[in-house]
Length: 133
Length: 94
Image: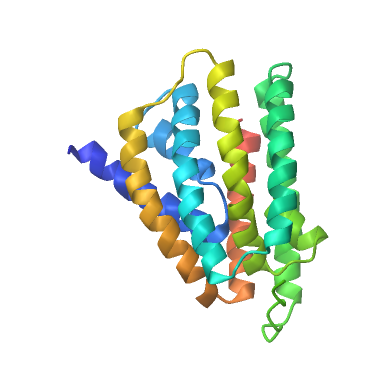
């Protein structure tokens, strides 16, 4: 095991923590770790990230299901729609310049984040937890 | 997916984060073959992937177990900060 392997484990640990707690797949963290930290080419970083997301999401997702954190019905709908979207997105991405798509998503993230922030700041701390279904 | 669940479906932040990660499982499994077969030769650094996964599986387990003890409000602010950072990165360096 080299020093690089150790850094990969540490980077993976950080990405996994964020993935488990925030609910992201890990690609948002894996890709910059690979391109900036390991100087891996963008396409290889994306492929490697995608391969690493599957076991990460399996462990995190199953832990959430066992802890009763997730809304199973919503996960089914979202997962199903996401599969269709992923296929559509992959087909569409061939015809679009990748930079355009990335910028559109970036703008969407910022807008949605501001809405979330506004909601976080306007809700009271004593808000009861949402009923699980 | 997380903003969709919170702002549109009205889920709590904790439930939204957990639900999002569960929903990623089928999406990631479906995306892997599409990505590989369209791109020609699979572009994966298996060695780095292996060591990343060793860390990330432990991290995902700990992160998922910790979720219950993070207050809703702090969680929401944390999610928003991560999303703003990612958004800025996407817009500036797509």
